[in-house]
Image 1 (cartoon, helix red, strand yellow):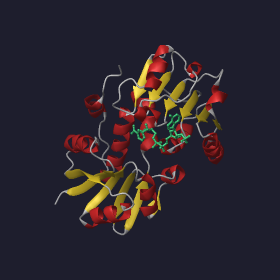
Image 2: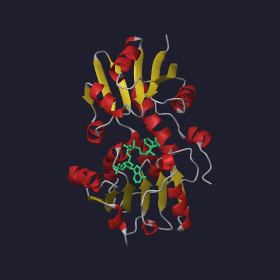
Image 3: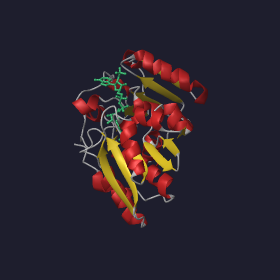
Amino acid sequence: MHDQYAVIGNPIGHTKSPLIHGMFAEATGQDIVYTAIEGRPGQFAEDAAAFRAAGGRGMNVTAPFKLDAFAFATERSPRASLAGAVNALKFDGERVLAENFDGVGLTRDVVENQGCAMRGKRVLILGAGGATRGALLPFLEQQPSELVIANRTVDKAVALATELRSHGPVRGCGYHDLDGQRFDLVFNATSASLRGELPPVPATVFTADGLAYELAYGKGLTPFLRMAQQTGVKRLADGVGMLVEQAAEAFDWWRGVRPETSAVIAKLTVPLR
Ligand code: NDP
């Protein structure tokens, strides 16, 4: 029988994960079956256990189950522990191993695919939710000169920065505190774009030869990216590379083979206009 993997989320109809992992499996000659499961709210443990009992070897986990997957795991990587959220599970006998590859996938996309080093740079991340939590440690490992987290609920940004302080120069603040400050790399990790909204970030934070990165993907030019473009930022990116790179990390973790990502990213990329 083929080794079975799945992505679980709700809703799950829009997921690109079966396509991505199918392309990885074909390119690397791995004999796997990868499906999508619509998890039932409040019943993550039952759904994951049923998949595992039916022979499942691992799962990708997406909204709204990343915290449930954290609780379901028996062992969590440092990245998953720090993020407080899990986006990949591996079943190994009685053990349920948990990882969070969102931040490492994002960092790899920025540094390797966009060619945008973070070392010595001023980095701003908007939002203090799950995606930001996953990104902070991988970002700090790149040794930016400063990492600023800005959030609508200021306390959440400050608390996160306090938690990470021993790992590098990180600071939390509100949007008003960004007035008069400039950053080399600006990430929109709020969910505002999913509703066509713009977080209240001043247009002056961008640098023309810097990078504006929207974590949401497949939405073309979001209000955040449009604003960055209007202020003269030339390098714009959405989260499709992050999506594919986190999938590649999971694939490698499960199968011990790291797939090539560029062809998959090219296939899924929607023009930013
Ligand atoms: P969460 O729900 O955990 O966090 C949402 C954050 O957005 C909070 O900080 C919230 O602020 C803020 N926010 C929401 N609406 C607004 C608004 N109108 N103005 C300002 N701030 C706002 O979401 P996630 O962290 O899971 O996801 C964030 C984004 O990252 C989404 O767009 C998601 O699609 C994307 N993502 C992309 C991935 C990829 O592979 N490319 C993977 C994971 C996420 P407050 O705390 O004040 O409520």
